[in-house]
Structures are given as C-alpha cells and as structure tokens.
Image (cartoon, rainbow, N blue to C red; front, side, top):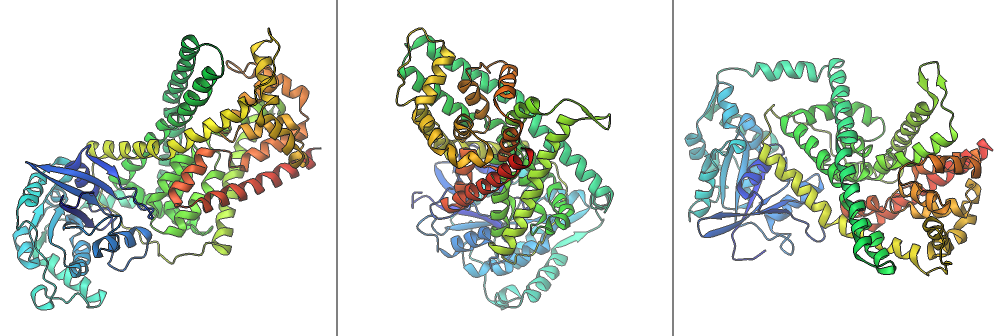
Length: 622
C-alpha cells in the first residue's frame, strides 16, 4: 500500500451499512486484506475521484473501544497505529452510523473520538428513517458533533457522490472535539454516561412520528418460541437443500469440463509420463479446486442474503439455547449447516462468529459433518452391503443407514465441541449479545461483490495449496514406473502401476496399522488415495480391482461383495464418518486459524475417532 495514497477507513458498529458503502464505492477495485500475522480480513479497495486515488479499508465492526474479540482488537489497533507494519494508521475515517439505530452509533462515536482521527459522519438508512415516519436533523447533528455529516442510502447509491466530494476537500474531515465542554461529555466518562448522552442527542436530532409496526409483527412470528422455530426449520431446510442440489448441476458441468480437458490432452500429447502429468496431475488438480466454487459461491450468496435482509441474526437467536448446551453460541449453526454440503465453505463462513474461541471450536468440529464428498463412499458401500429392504414398511433400510451416518457425525461433533470447551478451549467470555438489524432489501451489487470476493479469495489462497498437494499425490501413484508387458489392458495396467508405485508400497507398509479395522493393503491404499478427496476412494478401488467405474459403480459393487467381508465394510464406513480425509479442508483450517497446529490437531483427533470407531465396528460385526 503506497504511503502517498490517502488511506481512509470505514468505522462503525456491526450491521451499520459499512460493507454496502464499501462495495458501492470501490466496485471491482477491491480485495480481501490478507495481512501477515492476522486472521482478520478487512476489505481493501481503491476509490478514484477525478485524478486522485484513495485507498478505502472496511474495518470490522466494533461495539466499543475496549475490544472483546479478534475482529474488534484488529480495528482498535489499526486506529491507534499498532498495525503499522501491515496496515498503517488511517489518514481519515468515515464513521458510519445506522440511522435507524442512532443512539447505538452515537454511543460508540462518543468513545471513538478519543483516537483524534480526522472524521466525517456517514448516516445510513435514511430511506428507512423516512419510511418509518421519522425526520433526521442532519444539520443539527453536524453542529452538535463538530464534524461533517453525510446522509446516504448505500444500496441505492444516494449520497455516495457526496462522500467522494468529501474525500477531495482539504477540510473534508475534521478532528472531533475531545473535551467535555465542546461535546457535552468527556471521553473518559462511564459507559452509562455515554449511553445517556447518546440518547439525549438522538432525541434532539431525530423526530419519530410512527412505530415500525411491520417489523414488530414480523418479529412476533420469527422470534416466537414455537412458530419462530418452525420458520427456522423451513428456512434451514431450503438453505441446506439448495446448497446440496442447486450447485450440483454446475459441479457436474465442471467435472465434464475437466474430463473434456483430459480427453483433449490425450489427443494432442503422445502417451507417456508427460500426458499423465498434464492430465492426472495438473488438469485433475485444477479440477479438484474449481469444483468447489459453485458451493462456495452459493453458500456465500445465501448467507449474505440472510444477513443483509435481517434474518440471520434472528435465526442465531433461535438456535442459541440449543447450541449453548454444547458450549457454542447460536451463530455456530450456520457454518455447521453449510458443512453438510462441504466443510470448506462451511469453515469459511465461521467468520461471522465474533468470539475467537467459539469460532475455533466451530471450525474444528465442522469436518465431522457429513459433507457431500462422503456420499459416493456411503452410496457404494451401503448399496454393496446393506440389503434394500423396508423398515416399518415405509423407509428403506439403506436410507435409514444413510440418515444414521449423518446424525452420528452431527452428534459426535457436538459432543466434541462440549469436550473442547471443558478441556482445551475455554470461553473467552464474550456474551452472546445479538442485535436485530432492521428488515431491508439487500443490494444486488453488494451481494455480488461479496460473493466474488470470497470465491476469489478461495481460488488464490487455498486453491494453490490444493493444487500442489494434488500434484504430489499424482507423483506418488506414478513413480517408480512399473514394468508393464505390452498389450496389457489399460485398466489392468493402471492396477499394476498403482500396486508397484510409491503409494502402493506405502499402502503395504502401513497396512498392519489398519489391520484392527480389517483393512488389507488394497483398502489401505484406497484410504491413502482418498486423502486428496474422500470420493477418490471409489475410483482407487476401481483401479485396484480393474473395474471401470467411469459410468457406473455397479460392477465394483459386485466385486466388493465378493472380496470384502461385511465386518470390514462396517469398519470402512465408520472410518469415513469421522476421518478428515480432505486436504482441501486441512488447507482451509490452516487458512482460517492462521496456524498449522490446529490443522494438525483436527486431523489427529478425527483420525483417532475414525480409527476407534472403525475398529469397534469391525469387531462387533465380525
């Protein structure tokens, strides 16, 4: 970040409209600020006004100047200049206040002014104020505060030009008065005095004529002890189903595109190691990255919609009591729900949790949710070893077993959260204070930019790690090269190469470790191969048993029924319920926690769970 370019920060409470303003002002000229040494990701963008350029940073929302979370600490340290090596102290700030909750914004501002930064006040939701029958005296507010005041409607672009003009003015920002005589309150007064001052000022500059009856009636339903939970279940069912099914067509298109690229490579390049590297290493590696994009984009879209319209905070309130039994807070349900589709976007969405420790526990148990990558393994083994008979003449036994596996992962995940809270990661004593933002229509542009930002962040961070590990795994299966007789069928040749490769040798060497689960070296090799992604187990099994599973796994099912005992199949299924066999998830945990320590811990404890469950299952089914 060049020092001669003015740096302007957006500061305010959560849900005050900062991000909408940031997205509208910066457009596509923004990025996620992945600063070294910090896990918080403020938005950073460029605003061009005439011939001048300004850097705009969207700092995480804060409730007070005494931080209680990682996000708040980052914001306060940026405002005081303690993050100079990563993000220098802003030259000026736009202090954003939600006009529909003026008192809360002013309470924070009465503390914020002690930083002594040149400031301009931005009051959002002016249209909502007018729609509610209220009138804001912005001129009077400016006179009372001693700094410029701009009124905006971020999702409609109203007032944004005034903010740009303010950036160009030499006196566009003013240092707030910090003495009690000028402001009517000293910055070192008690919080009760700050609240009383903010309430009195709000009453002077905001005239309210009517009450928002629509929001009150809607809250009467959405927060009702019974109907609120019914609505919540309906919304979450739609949420889960959409992530699970709506992304699938596009993911299938991506898979087809990857397969077409591999076919094209085979027609252009001669058979040999170069073709294998391009096709199975590079193309397949890239495919394993971009195939997650539809789910990440859809999950980001749905969460942003729910948050911007005002429902997400209310859903978290509904779930807080249930999650609290296991030591979590209501916001944790969103990442865990998303993890049933894919742990990667689910873990990324844990950023909505303000408590660092609650966020960490949520991330660590997210891999136990039954993601869609487990489905091919579940489907193959259940169809092979569980008879298709009816239970109570209504449900299929295979469907019941599948549902039980999902429930088992969720239950054990919550138990692990309970144990982590009691034994390793104590509460950081951030109370679950939830603010219900006003209901509003989300900005399409702001949502699109938020979704694109998350997708781009995934591709440029975790994607590079995933691609590297995919190439490493390919090399282990291709070297050393086996001596394969001429005329050997392709599938048999693949099986021979796999058996004699470094991965095959490793499978035979490790097999004794998995003997208590009933695994032979072939199954062990399948487990090793599926560390790239769980669903790889199906194709590895197909290669080992020389069965073509490209179109259907029906042939493989028949082979597995002959070759694998039921007790061993039970061990495999239970192993896959718990094991973190997804290098993509490991990379994301590293990315979100900022440490390989937690990635290693997540891998180790899930492996211990998987091994124990698999061994017990094999023993009981023998």
